[in-house]
Length: 402
Ligand SMILES: Cc1cc2nc3c(=O)[nH]c(=O)nc-3n(C[C@H](O)[C@H](O)[C@H](O)COP(=O)(O)OP(=O)(O)OC[C@H]3O[C@@H](n4cnc5c(N)ncnc54)[C@H](O)[C@@H]3O)c2cc1C
Image (cartoon, rainbow, N blue to C red):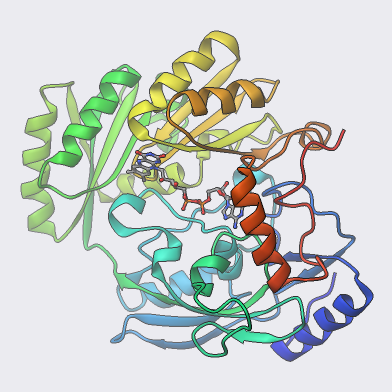
């Protein structure tokens, strides 16, 4: 494993690999390293030693950190000043079966965003700037140095979620926000998936600023907060803000939701744990390799997909509705074709296979297959950033490798 201590050293390593055409598997500390298809690269290049907060002025609500900085270090520095990352980056160690410290670079490379996404935006919406090393071994600063032939592209947005296929992130600058002073969760008990979707839509249409909405069917309910959620499926709605405001909004929301189901309220401590566990996909952090899918589609259609799959495949699922995601764990067969056809039939979206036994992953494209036009565009962009194709080859583009 190569672990450069400076950006210049990283650039030198990448230049040398570009010259020899030797592929590199880019990583932070590898906690999300199972994302995508397995890269066809022997050597791992880690940003872990490019670590530390480079600039943070709480009054400006902006932080600059080197890519290898642990998320925990950033969260601690922000907490000292009553601030937080509003995109609440999930910790994927549990579901991916990895160890080590999640880094801010890895979070940016995967656009790791939590259940507050609908109101606060995804990680990429909070990112203001990046520095990275491209496949020529050049250090690029978004907004600073303009790359030949790719002017007009928003490099910050492009790098976020590109899973290390365009360059090695070395430093990121992002917005932070005041941490909410108080939070509660309204729990509706016993709703079927379809009615739960209607209840969540009704809650979000109210002027109470719901900042998290999820539906946890009976099959997963007991795996959250040590089984402390009331019996039956739990539909959970989060409110955050100042103490008095949360109380008033909570009363209004509870009253409206009472038309759907019996309502209970969780306090701030339970709320914090519950939403952390929803973000981290806690029910499926089960130490198994059972196929795990991350599905992004119109939330209003998602229950139909799950209901259809239940008829033909062994599937367990829960809905992070405001995060725009359905998390699905298959009993054994990853059911890729059935799943992807089902999503297309319901208006489209995408399914990413996050976890499966290695033999299965080798035969199923982990990423949603792209249209011919998007593939062409994607290849052109990649050719500009990484002309020798040395960054994570195969990770996004690899099809079934039978
Ligand atoms: C409240 C809410 C309502 C929504 N309503 C709708 C709706 O009505 N209709 C609808 O279709 N969707 C809807 N969505 C889903 C939303 O539009 C999707 O989340 C979005 O289209 C996908 O973008 P993303 O930022 O989530 O992608 P990411 O999370 O960044 O990535 C999505 C997938 O693409 C992969 N990926 C990322 N970057 C690249 C790349 N450079 N090359 C190849 N693959 C890449 C990722 O690994 C991942 O698998 C809704 C979401 C929310 C939160």
